[in-house]
Length: 135
Image 1 (cartoon, rainbow, N blue to C red):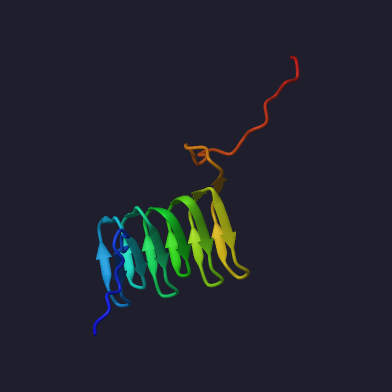
Image 2 (cartoon, rainbow, N blue to C red; image 1 turned 90 degrees about the vertical axis):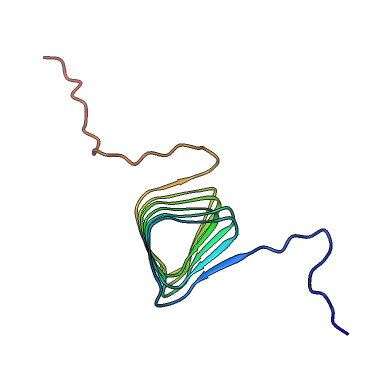
């Protein structure tokens, strides 16, 4: 007798897998989860989870509910809930999220904005001291 693995009233989440050796140029958008072990030159957007595997490479912005980086990402990372940088993860870019987890050995070069605030802008100039002396 065959048994059904689906339950009435529950939704099974779809996952998109981009395998090692696959290269994509352009925008990638998905309502489910994305696992990336290949390479993407462009922005990634998911209403769920984005996982950049150890062999994955992204050159672009990532927007998702939660993001795990085990490979190399160059660009801004925006997660509604959580960003995790794994020990072999390498991120050159800014992070905007509620929760940030960084494993020992991970590399991160950029700015971080954490919490519930919505807007985050990257400073374009270094601050210069104001001359307050009277002349």
